[in-house]
Image 1 (spheres, rainbow, N blue to C red):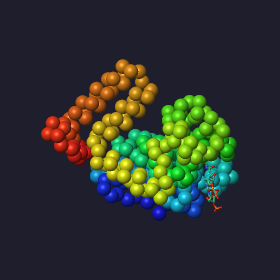
Image 2 (cartoon, rainbow, N blue to C red):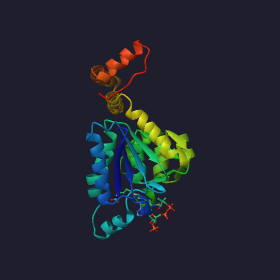
Image 3 (cartoon, protein in one colour):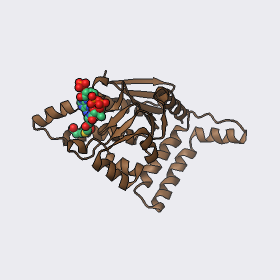
Image 4 (tube, helix red, strand yellow):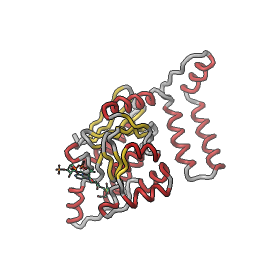
Length: 259
Ligand code: T3D
């Protein structure tokens, strides 16, 4: 199986599993990944998603062997970008549940873009990001032109994408690309701890928070205020909000059921 899907404690763990090829993405793997993301999105029992790679890489981006065959056959790239990468990235960014990337090694090209699309990036100390696109004469895809400048600012994004220099975990933390950097042997535990914490949180409010941020990113303050009011109204109607308010007044810890 090139993508492993597993649910435990309301966390769906999606593992890219082609370690011999650094989890680089073939068409069938991209289809499996999209299927796994859609499955997690549609399962009400899943309240957080954890994305990681098997072996020593997170994901080396496009499988360049398959890519070379496509070039040889005269097939352009827009096909797979539109048919696969774009829906994968949108599936992550529009997921109504928090998505944590456990970056266990190198994330290159579309693999880096995939990590940037997630809500959190926990990096192993040996992880690194490679904006490999320019190194093979390509421009960024899978959302890196959008996500990266929001994460690190336009000047840094330009530098990283044009120069394509490798960013190690320490530098990634300085730039704001890492939520946290942990020793490699602590990565699985640290990322899981965060995912489980999120899976026990106010799921509806998390979804509303993600929507509010996405909406506000390209709107005026007046528009953002109006959207916040609509979303707040939705959250205020949840059982979680009612129970958490009661718990506060009773000086108890809230227990969120995600509804
Ligand atoms: O349709 C389209 O194609 C458009 C979409 C494009 C989106 C993109 O993602 S473009 C960017 C594509 N990715 C890259 O350019 C990264 C290429 N890989 C590397 O730069 C390096 O392999 C790494 C920095 C990722 C890791 O380096 P290192 O020294 O740790 O390992 P390695 O020896 O280079 O790789 C180990 C094996 O993985 C090796 O296979 P082998 O020789 O042992 O059989 C290598 O060929 C394979 N591998 C690594 N990356 C890819 C790959 N095989 C296929 N595709 C890869 N991207």
